[in-house]
Each structure stands twice: as structure tokens, then as C-alpha cells.
Amino acid sequence: MQPVENVNTVKSVGSFEQKDNRKEHNYQGCGPRWVLHMTTMCFRFASGVPIGHEPAQQQIREQNAIQPIETWYKKYNTLSLLIGVLSGLIFLIITADRCRQCFNKLENKSHAGSFNKIFWVYGKNVDSGYLKEVFTILQRFGYRNKPNSSDWDLLWAHDYPFRNLYPQLNNLKQHQKVNHFPGCGYITNKVDLATSGLKYIPPAFKLPGDKEKLIEYSKKFSNISFVQKKNDHRNIQIKRIEEIDLDKEGNFVQEYVDKPLLINGHKFDIGIYTVITSVDPLRVYVYNGEALLRFCPVKYYPFDPNNLDKYVVGDDYLPIWEVPALDYYYNKLGLSMRDSLNTYLQEQGRDPSVIWEQIEDSIRTIVLAKEPLILNVLKSSFSSKPTPVSSSPVQYLHQEKEMIVSDKNIATFPKACSSDLCRTSCVSSDCQLCKPCLSPETRQYLEQAYMEHLHKGDCKRVFPPSMVRLLIWYTASFALVNFNNPLEVNETPAEAFDVKDLDNYSAENRLHFRWFQGKCQLDSSWCF
Image (tube, rainbow, N blue to C red; front, top):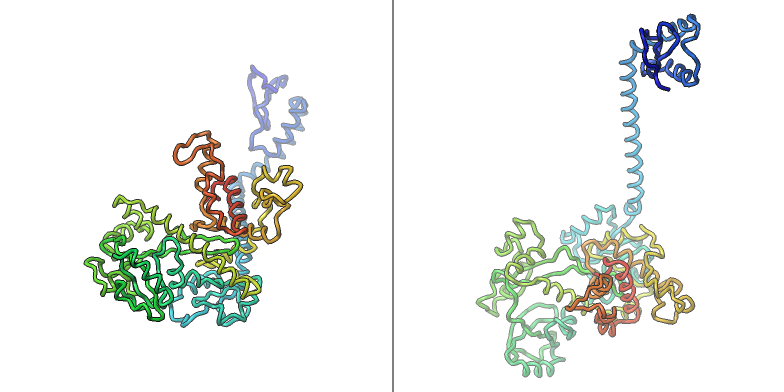
């Protein structure tokens, strides 16, 4: 309703105004002061009751009823506000405390499993301090050290455990994990690795068994020298072929690389942290966040074969923080060893990616070549495959049963799987990764691979290998871009990846690689 205009003399009555002649009425709104009266007056006004025509006695009674309320309100207004504020604060404090208790319960529940887990460190003099980081990390995550326990959750073995601990490891329980796997000596044994004849490894010969091969090789390359070592990698010497006792037992010789890459005149080696999480199918990761650089304590030139400190990295190696060329990057800028090396090489006009690509390819080549030997040991020696864990064990232990992998997480090749061929049969290789065709074992390792991908952090997958060319192919296809170098969009996915590498893969590795291809097509993060 609109207020009446042309009001003459007005006097206040409640929350409305009334003219002296009481013929016309003016409504001025329901003010906050008259809370109790406001409801009645507004309601009545909205109902169209002519308030101005009420008897005078009724208006007096209403005014008398309001006056005590107004007096009480003025007297206790401040006290009411104070009580209201205090009540609000108390409510907030109680709520915050309840939330804190709730979060504590959730946190305790999430770590309840860890606090009940037991680890056992196996090796010589394990309490002397050289494994203190292992103890610190495991204890920080709530694991209890219980040596010689039979119901451990993690066996962290510094020494190869599968001979002396065979009875305990032959029948592992589902929850038990070991940081080695049987047959890993095929990778870590230096004599076996050196004499494998694989790419990136300088040729080596066991003596006296490979005597004739060594003589023949030295005739082809007459200007080279050899490193002679005992099988325990001790007593290293650089010799010409005519200086070597070819009939001496327990030795091997290897071609010496006489022009190594130097930094500040020092020869150095690079240590890469590598994780093998599965064998058949094979999955290998390298830690991409750091590398270990160790330098010979004496400069390489002038070269002296009698001074091992010039070309052998021993226990007294020179650390990176004492190498002047890397001091600023590592000490001042706080870069990692890996990034310090990269920055130095870039400033020298070199491309460090060449080094890392060759290292990753060498790891992939070696592990692939040794996988059949490792698998034979696993099958012949143990009734259950020990589950390997990474150099940071808690990462993989924490994954177990923390998340359920759904069908959509491992699904690939939706177009092929929805075809009439795959709807009716699993015979075709195109259908092997479709849900109806997955065996329980295949599904299990695909779930494990999915979880590893989610939790890999700074680790980089080196096998199955990177699919960068395949990713470029799909990018080019979708963008309709013609790449003259190195790809064109008219390439097929098989041509975009060097499928010749697949010829030497086992059946499980080929299927696993194809699954990663399918994931790469759906999500580019799976291409690396």
C-alpha cells in the first residue's frame, strides 16, 4: 500500500502515524524498535483493518502494554548483546574442538595399520649406523623393528637374503614384502654384467675361459688398454694385452675407456636409483629427482696407471660440494646433483639430455636381457614370487588396499572393445585387453600398474618405454598438423613407435606395453 499524501498535523501512535481528524492514515513502516508490536500492527494493516477507527481505550491499553517492554529493553540491551557474543564464542570453541577430535580419529585410523607393522633389517652389523636412514624412515612411519621375527611385514635386506633365509622366504604371506628379488644378482654382479656383451658396456672377458676371444679382440683393436680386476672387483690395474697373465684364475679384463668426460679435470661416475616393481610383466622406474655423483680425488691428467685415485672412484671419493666447477650450483643455488651437472654441461655448450637418455636406455636394455634369467630363478626356487619394494619402501607399502581400482581405471581401446569382433570373442589380439577378456592375473597386474602410476612421484618409467613419438602422432592427428620432422600425420601408430623393439619382448611384456599404449591414447601422462 502507498502512504497517504497531504498529511497535516501528525502524532506518533505505535509504528504508524495518525492525523488529528482520524479520517486518513499514514503508514510509516514497521521499525525495529517495536518488535512485538510490529507484527500485530503490520499484519493488521495488511489485512485492511482501519486502525485509526479503534476505540481510544484500546489504543491506550496497547500503549500501556508496550511501555514496560521498552523500559526492559533499554535496561538490559547491553547485557543481552554481551551474553549473545559469549554464547557465540563458546559455540565456536566447542565446534572447533569437535572437528579437531574428528580429524584426529581419521588420522589415527589411516595410520592404524602402519603402527602394527613390523620390519626386519637383515645384514652384517646393521646397528653400526650405515643403515640409519632406513631405520629412521621406517620408524617415522610407525613401523616397529623386530629382528629375526617370523611375522614381519617388510624384510629390508642389505645382503642377498635368498640363500640364508630360504626357509622363511620360500612361502611368503600375502602381506610380506622384500626389497630384493631372487636372481637380482644377474643385474648387480659386476663380473656377470661386464661380460654380458650388451650395448653400452665395454667388452669384457673372463679368464682363463675367454682367453682366445680376448686375444682375437686385441688383434682387431691393437691400440687399446684393458682394466684387469679380480672377480670381487679388487686389485684393479690398467695393462696392455702383453702384460696380462691370461691363464690366471679368478680374473677378468675389460676394455678401458681412456678419454672420459671430466669436470674440473676429475673423472666421475653417476649413480641412478632404480626400482623394479614387477617381473613378467616387467616394470622399471628410475628416480628422476636426483642422481649420485662421485669424483676421483686426483685429477685425471697427467695420467698415471699406477695411481688409482686418478681413475677409480673409491670409498674416499671427492664429493660434489668440493668440486669448484659445481660448487656454485650445488652450494649457493641449492640445486640437486643432477641439476648441477645439467647446468654445468649446458653452460659448456653440451646437451645433458643425451647422457640421461643413454642411461635410461642402458637400464632398459640390461633388465630386459636379464629378465628371463630372473624369472627362471623365481619359478624354480620359490612357490610364491617375493614382492619387491622400492628404495623408499613406505611409498609402495602405503599403496596396498588404500584405494580400490575400478574397471574404468584400467579400461583401454574403447573403440576396439565395442566392435562386433570383441563383443563376441576374445581370440583377436585387439580384444585381449577388453574387460570380458581379462584373466584374473592380468587384471591384477594392470591394477598394480595403475596404482604405481598414481604414486610414482618423481620416478620416471623406463619400461614399458616412453611413447613420446606416439604422443606426437596423436597430437598431430588431432591438430591436423603435418610434421615433416620427425613425423607426418599419415603415419600409423605402429609406425610412430619403433615396433621392432617389441620382437624381443615376452608375451606378457607385449600385452603390458600395448595396455600402456592404450592408456597413452586416453591420457598423455601415461606416455612417459
